[in-house]
Image (cartoon, rainbow, N blue to C red; front, top):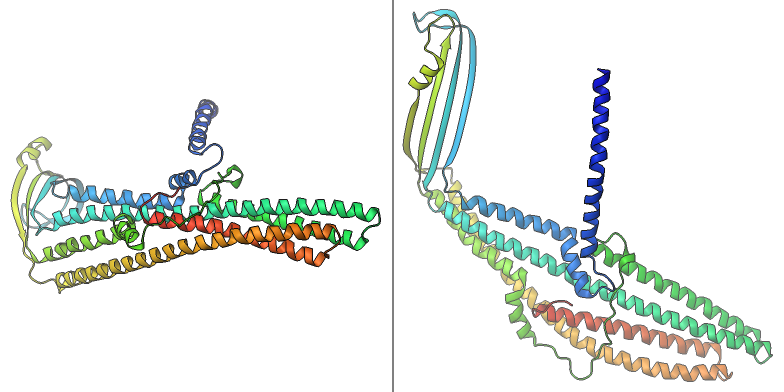
Length: 459
């Protein structure tokens, strides 16, 4: 026993020694695959979307649904094939029972062995099998459309969050520039205070502005980290530290906004949008469901065949050998069975009625989807046009407030303006810059969404 235990421990140790490099190699390969899928350098919007489409948990769950639909199609496709079932049994019995010899009760011990092989083929099912196959294929197409809809939803979420990160990064950049400006002003005022040209209160106010700008910069940096965290969670990344986004070139909105009309976008969306396609497919599938329900009114016809044999022995009585009985008891049968529905407690009638009602529901859902889509396109179009106007106005406001601040800064440094006027001018500039950045990324997002409805990719 002791040697067996030592041998087992040694075998386990050897197995771990052999398997450890293999497991380590597999882990390295998996890590390499993950690194290979992850973009190097700054991430573009398209790279973020592509990565999310491959790694998002919600989308993976949707992919499993489509695989289940494919399995169902395969099942319905081969429903006409014959089935084959085999069975075997071995029974022992003992005690008092009726004897076949004198028809009296006697104590017996017996055993019997039985083998059976059967098959059946559906010949006619009232159209149920072909309609079930057609319905399964339509359901698969609808499942694929649902998957595409989920991919579109994730893509829009990523586009919105991607632009939110860029917006926060630019706000952080502006806050850093404002902090540097406040520090420069503090240094100048401190020098003027040292030579007695300004009172100490002015220096204290400048120091307070530096502290306030430092707080604003810290808050802006935190907003960047939180936005990156939200984006990394959408991408299923373990940490936002690997994310560095590619900043798009400056947005130009000179001239009229080149956008397709609402009706053109709507016509294209009716063809390309997966939620419309899914509703249309489910409406089509409802016709097959009605045909399947109607098949319950028709008779069914099937072909069946059976092979069986057995062995029986009673203790105390002479019996033929196992081989002899297996050969002698071998029997075959073949036959055709017809089942005619006569009355099933109105189940078939109610199934037909329910299928027709579901079709009406699918019709209403499709119309609702189309109306919702048209409203979304209208809103996106007007939002895109309005964002262009807001962007232009914001740019003009930044230019005007920048000029006013430059003048106010000179006056303040020359002692011709007080700190209240200076702070008000600075706040106006910061507010206009923030509004201009917000208008810029709102413009980018809304135009991308409208073109996305028109069938273009998000990138």
